[in-house]
Image (cartoon, rainbow, N blue to C red; front, side, top):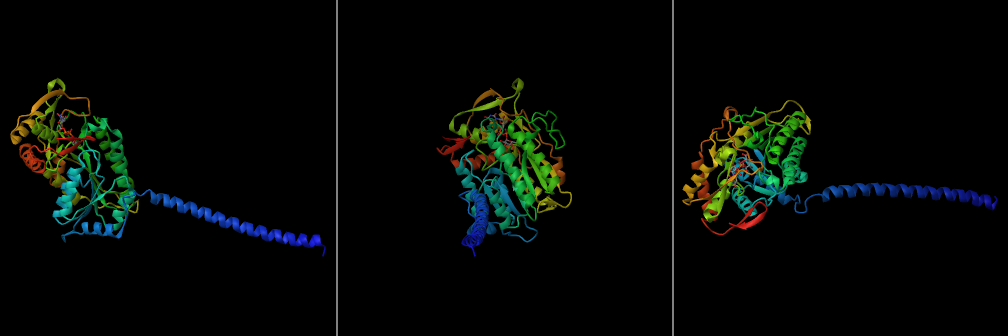
Length: 424
Ligand SMILES: O=C(O)[C@H]1O[C@H](OP(=O)(O)OP(=O)(O)OC[C@H]2O[C@@H](n3ccc(=O)[nH]c3=O)[C@H](O)[C@@H]2O)[C@H](O)[C@@H](O)[C@@H]1O
């Protein structure tokens, strides 16, 4: 055999075995690259988890304990978002006290003093309600909660509230009231079984309407603030998730809610603080010097409306994102049906604080405020048995009692107002 041929043949055999090895090596390398790519990208999804949140057995145990019902007759198992907030903490407490399972979620942001939110969290912990530190935009946390326990209802109260702040920080309203709401709906529609949802809309959707009292069937095309616009958008988004995925959704249009453990950014609260400190208060007046008015609604009445909405919410009809039939979609006014002017609010505060206010009457700034609100609650009365019982004088007396016990009548405490801290 010619050497050259031999080597030729050997060479060609050698070449073919080398190329086979090379091919094999390349495909292994290719396989490794592809799997590495998927591992990294999945790691990328995992690494998107908030560094603070780790789903552990200890965490799951705390969630399950918090959701363990304490009554037999059809207890609810409710995820309350915004549970360290004003309405959220009251609703969580009411549900837990009657024996439902409750777990909370709150991002403890600094829109107002975080210490007040932590104090509400401590109060809930004393009643075995676990409030998880987390943001409604974090899909992983919400999926983890729904996987850890059979959540039957989501009471979605987490939001960027406040009509006037929207002019300072518009993005915060998109982040919480649009993106956050969609995220809640997204996780719920994919859950199996899908929970029913009750969420906080707002009386501000009535905007510049002049027909009073405001009814749910009225057009709501004139929002006066970005806040109101995000709440109106939320109602449209709710319709979409109900229509496509069969989510049972109830929207609640709250009317200027006030009471103990309230929000320091609201007038009744900030007026109280400033009256006690001897600081002037700005009382806005409307066109032609007309007094502004609100249908102020006491927190205990609002809580009854929230709980009745949960109790009457029909099940969602979807399963794992697929709708199997028409689902409940509702919107209710939760107000007091008796508007009171802002100057009268100040009169009542002066009486209960036994201190004269230093009033500065100023023209209502173009800040998203509306001249008045007034709720027609016949729909909530008929379908929820909602009947508000606390008038403003009685409610503010209870608020002032709480305020003085929590802050003391003149102690220097650090308060977050807007996004800066100040001594009150
Ligand atoms: O009904 C609602 O849905 C809304 O009620 C309140 O919004 P608002 O009615 O503006 O409540 P406050 O900020 O407490 O204002 C109450 C009244 O006091 C007036 N005001 C406010 C602040 C101030 O310094 N002076 C003043 O006269 C406002 O114009 C308004 O007429 C809440 O802040 C919103 O989150 C909620 O969505």
